[in-house]
Length: 403
Image (tube, rainbow, N blue to C red; front, side, top):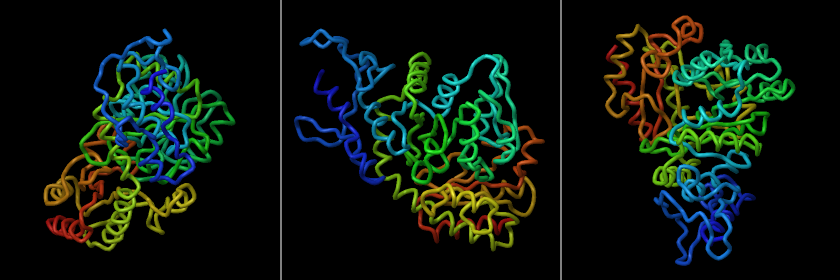
């Protein structure tokens, strides 16, 4: 076994420590020069056989290390660092969150099976799952509530939920859903992007797979597209890895380096963005041009109790949704009137962003379902970044004064 392979194998030597220590030091990398920042392995190929022994060169999880479409040491260091943060035994890194979800679905579905999905989810996720109907998969869309998901679960189903729904920030009781899934021998896939492993670990509560758009909080700088799929189950891991290998959707080494770098500041960024988001939600609740605010960190929010029960910290994320007085045009005017806050449909990065969900993430949800879920023309979704809170509030106040 080469020294490189040994270094990858013996990463994550700080499992006993707390979150940020693991995020910063969990890769355990070192080399003959004493470097503690892992290098970027751009090599497309590796020597398949170890000359000294004639044995096949393997990564630490036993897969061939010969071709970067399958395994890459930089990508592997990211996976080994992230897995314990999500309470997983291992994870697989992808070139986007949708690629991570696609592989997770392909690893769990079978012809004729049912997928249970709330109809308020990220629009491209909804498109992907509905397109599976053409391959003999039965898709059951339900109202985005814990009760409706629980009532729909049958034996051997695949269930997909978001910990916090996009865009109205409903908080589903994943613990109860996970319990029912295990009782019914069903597979639960949870998109944990909105909470990150800072707040919640679905694998501890019955989820089979957790997926992330690492583009958001985990990388955190709006400069990389990436995804992660994590599990505690070896068979699922192998299936997900094999789908990544066949689809060619592995994260590239430079992007893996950027995500690994962003991961080091995840906790401090998430705390700052959550704190600012709560203050902005409180400001918006009192604003005369705002008619409704969705933020699970507000004590009078419908989902405050569920969020407080599930989340490990008294934090509720950096996204706030709110409805303004007026219709589509007035709402669009707010988006166009902000100066610091930019009109863009992502979240979790250093820059604050604002978007109208009906023309972005939610535009693929049928209008009937959008209205039932509360996704109306006057709804805005705000992703709070790291700018000074006072500047963000003044920016919002100026924009709202335009309507």
